[in-house]
Length: 82
Image (cartoon, rainbow, N blue to C red):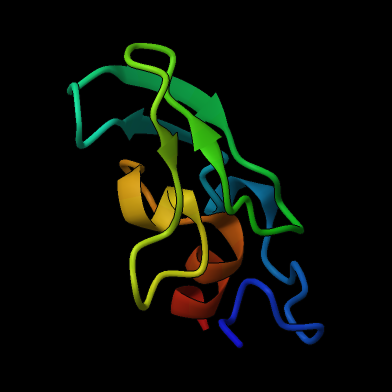
């Protein structure tokens, strides 16, 4: 199970250390849209507002933000800060 989905993943850093906005970019049509990331959950499905494609994490990634976002999800960011 990935770090962001594990029950042991907890927010331990100051809010200023974690980025909660990510720009999602569709690999099919190139549409980019800023989105707010959940701080304590994995988002495994994202619907592109440009072409309607349903995006899911690529192999090895825990969520759509880690696969298609400009920054990884908050739990992964927190792991990298430790």
